[in-house]
Amino acid sequence: SQQGEEDPQALSIQEGENATMNCSYKTSINNLQWYRQNSGRGLVHLILIRSNEREKHSGRLRVTLDTSKKSSSLLITASRAADTASYFCATRDSNYQLIWGAGTKLIIKP
Amino acid sequence: GAGVSQSPRYKVAKRGQDVALRCDPISGHVSLFWYQQALGQGPEFLTYFQNEAQLDKSGLPSDRFFAERPEGSVSTLKIQRTQQEDSAVYLCASSLGDRASYNEQFFGPGTRLTVL
Image 1: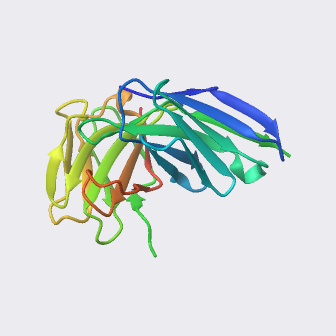
Image 2: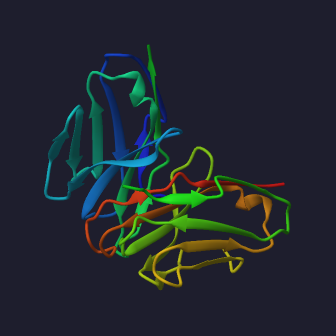
Image 3: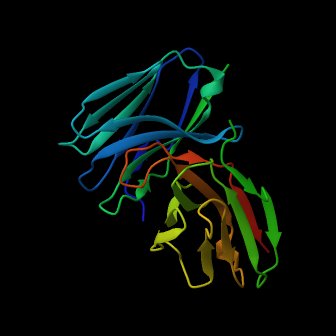
């Protein structure tokens, strides 16, 4: 079963623009993680935000978490062609398993 | 250093055939996870090892699926009598601490299994 749902399912933007992806989840969490997957590098961990954090930054990435709405967003600023990938959010359940959404497919047009 | 490696990268099997998928985790990593990823979906948990102990196999879809990590390093996922619905990418991940630790999981490139 999948806990998270990413929105939108697909997003196509021009290089240099910002990209925002959203994730909703169902149960209470300890942390939420964002991963990127492309054919070149496989699945790579991007950033983890804990349940007591509201916002976190890493380079061009900004993640927010709203536990009252059970949602998170990932913002990629100044997008580059190399950002073309699928992006997944993942949360831990009570058995420490990572539960994944279906992902957002991001295409950066040159 | 070397990351997680998996072999083979691609496997085509005839329905009913047995397959074995190998995962070499990062050296010294305690935790090893197997996931199944269908096309256009996120990974789904299959099983978890802490060193050589298989502590969670709740995600294995049937008794045709079997995993082992006998010496706490390399792991093998075996699928017996493969069916078409087994076609997917099988991902292996390892992490430094046990699963209760908030450690990043490092993923291998996956094995794409196609069952004809």
